Length: 162
Image 1 (cartoon, rainbow, N blue to C red):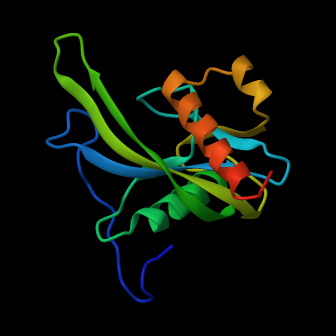
Image 2 (tube, rainbow, N blue to C red; image 1 turned 180 degrees about the vertical axis):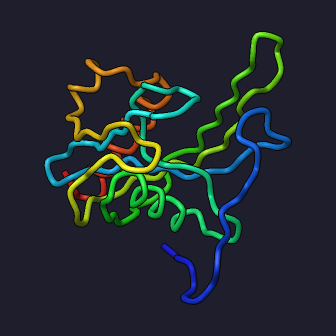
């Protein structure tokens, strides 16, 4: 995967997340350890506060997608990963009670291998947890997130990881 050339600067965006003027673009990763467990984060902020999901977030201006995914994982979980490949595109649109678009994200989801570090909740993650595939049923994981994890797991296994 191509990554950010050395010396190029990126800039965090200051776009309004709630009631945005345009869709916001992000990157996330389904990270698997050697045992085939996926790393989940419990969201610390809206939308979906309290739910378990994949680590990820908004791209910085000038940042490549894979670099954004790695950065977000590092910021939320304090680990280093190797991005394996694109899994799918996730579109999240949430409207308020009046029908206005309150949140609109377009997130590119990758699968990744855990390289180093012990996962610790940081930034906007309220908690982190390594979860086996059968354990997913016992957690508050959105159905679309579960679908991404299952697709990512299949790609991880196809790459000879599991």
